[in-house]
Length: 309
Image 1 (cartoon, rainbow, N blue to C red):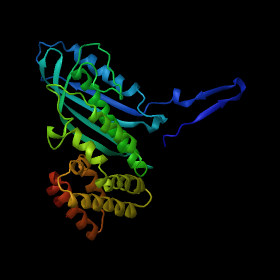
Image 2: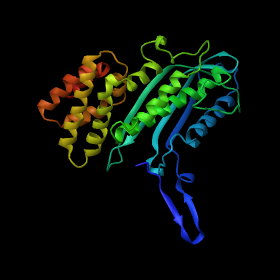
Image 3: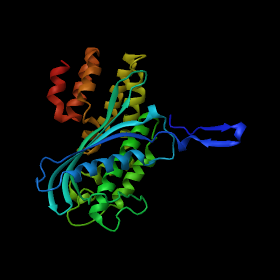
Image 4: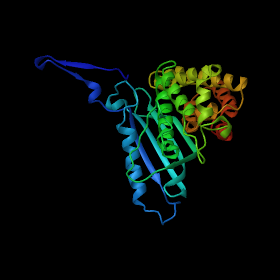
């Protein structure tokens, strides 16, 4: 997975670096919704923005690894524009979704399904979208916030994808996400980067993933996906046991430190998948799963109780 390959074409004495021609890391789809924005604003601006963001994400190299076309991470970014604060300045929500395939199947298991309500930015039609991870804020903070928020979630997607394939495989990308938090744009109208901006924001999500007290969360991701979802095809019973093990890990973290952002974040978008997994479990495992899920995924507590009787 994600290994750099080099082919030597001996007859011409050329070394062709596959990284130059291989697909990028993400197969992303960006959608910009603008029905709530005043009709006095030219609609073409939003179509230009959508095209520019698709290019920004899909054509940029986000890692030093090489991904084959079939290894690209499936993800989407839904930007729902809500208002125009000033000319060219927009407030919005952004919903980020990503998934990775379960081994030996065509099934995509959700990695992220999260809505961020603290999104404001400046965009002037045809302005270049720039992002420099060594100088994140930029000359104009609200313009920089557009690409900084996207880069933050892209690094989270990469981190979780890598974590799901190897133990602590995503550490470098969690660090990149935290670096964006630390150097995030700071200006009136921008929020989500600071610990005092609320209890559920970009700061706290990155902090939870980087905090050494919560390393079991990373183990839970690896166990859930690599030891669980990837083994479903060959040994469903053992895979289910590993998924139950991952729930126990998350419960340990939740018991020691309640109300962490990372716990509900893990479960968003997963309830249907988890129910399907434990529908076939024996009664003891089913009861244990429901007991854990009602504490860990409170939003869907009644759903688990009803579906996993």
